[in-house]
Image (cartoon, rainbow, N blue to C red; front, side, top):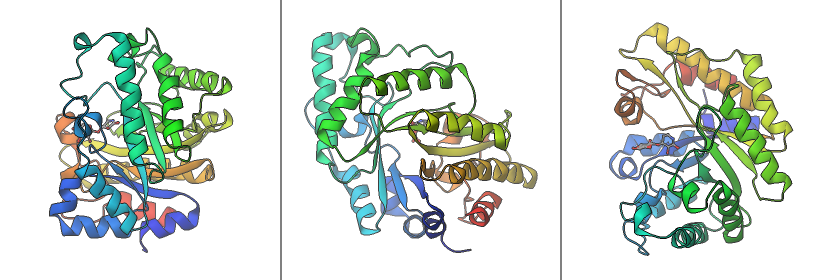
Length: 319
Ligand code: XIL
């Protein structure tokens, strides 16, 4: 099996992963696999507001810069993640500390600062992350309140576009991979903004899947994702991982491989419109899953000892 990054690029998509600056510094096997196997990388936490802006007006760029430098050295694309989110916000950014007008200015300045700094280096920006509830209503966040509604979303895209006209601008969310009220609401809202001239290029489907729940069959998944493409958007699978109830065993590994390959083949079937397939980190021991979903884990295609799991081999065969 050749490196997945070259197989993917030959097949017409980018193959990516989330990356963490601390593992980059400390783990040489990680570095080797990262450069050899992936053509796109996404900072897992290093470009979030909490990481970049510990104090009002003060930015720390070191960790994000190291990832950008690594990508440049290895001819990798970068997915910038993420500008507007309700999680991992700096502690100083409290709703009662600022007026709505101040908050709007703070958001604008943040987007200009971060997108401006990396202007020309970022392939896709996740401009807005997770703005919807499961039932399709808007999530009640600091930004929703400051703007008195969802207008912050359009503004965020406009400000990002001004700061880097070349980057592809994405809305990113989870549970968009299958038909749901949330997927419908996201699609119709973004299509309306696009029709009004708001610069939105793509929709990121995170792809955090659990073997506990059912997953659509291949044709159903393809038909569903095609709706986003037919509405004029690029799509990208941005954070794919497939968690299983622990302990790991061979049957679960094979079920996991099937979900990974099904998502990858959906992206391949839409190549040109589906730009990239990114996993949310590797190997299993570095995944966020065990810390967030008690009793589940082993969610990446690479085992703790860096041996490839069935999901990895089967994705290679598909590419
Ligand atoms: C996760 C990271 O993987 C963790 O390290 C961090 O503690 C919390 O955030 N959706 C997203 C990602 O958009 O930013 C999240 O990443 C996972 C869910």
